[in-house]
Amino acid sequence: MSTTIQVPYVSIVVPTRARRFYLSNCLESLLALDYPKDRYEIIVVEDGTDEGEEVTDAIRRRSLLPIQYTRIPHSGAATARNVGVQLSTGEIVAFIDDDGIAVPVWLRRLVDALLMEGVAGVGGRVSPEYPELELVAAMGLGGDLLWSGFNASPKKIQDVDHLPGGNMSFWRKALLEVHGLDTRYTRRGSWREDTDLCVRLRLKGYRLLYDGEAQIIHRAARWMNPSERLRPGLVWAMIRDDAYFRVKNYGWSGVWGTIRGVFASVKARIVQASANLFLIFVHLLAWIPGVTKGLRNKNDLFGTLEQK
Image (tube, rainbow, N blue to C red; front, side, top):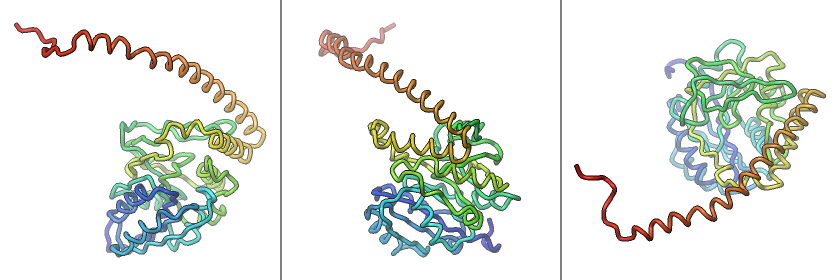
């Protein structure tokens, strides 16, 4: 994209919560974008913690870019993103999670796609590893997500029904038209509020696009600790948010979709729990033959390759 052409001004909103290391890497990547430096700003919104203020200030002092920082009471991702929209001055608002690192072409690719006819939002890949060539990102009966994962890199920009929350962009006027994100999702789960926004924009007749080249390297910090998925409070919040999303947008069809989804999840958890109990015994016993064999061959200086 040539700097001689007046390209849209973009506000990049980075919601964050107690992740100073990830936030620092994210902001560094935004400084290195190949988009004209006088045509975008960065807005950091910290949700209930204050670890990001020092990081943001340090980067602001050595950057020519306008970088804002604001802190809000712990309210969830939807509220943090809405606050970012309120503070934004750009024609376009792009969202990236604090545990994401943007590739240099990220913003330019998003903006180029947003300039296509009838488009309100564009998202991109959130994982650089093992990209699939085909993407499925549609909505099924009762709010079911028909989704292959946002690590796909299809050959062409593709129309989709929903976008990845950690890598999405919209015309600001379209966000205001649907009153932004719904903040009635739980602050802990923050699950489905991004898909909810996409559904409402689609109902207004707007197109949503996915460009696999507009990628971020995503750390997925929230799930780095497997025990996160076992916390009752978090599971409760995510199931509650999923049910709210389905019924709000799909009515009675969403009720039945919720029931189907709950029973499917329970079945999966029973299977997983049974498998884990068995694996406990495997873990307790599997070391014994290894130790026995190691003792039997202790101090053996030779490998197993035979000479010819």
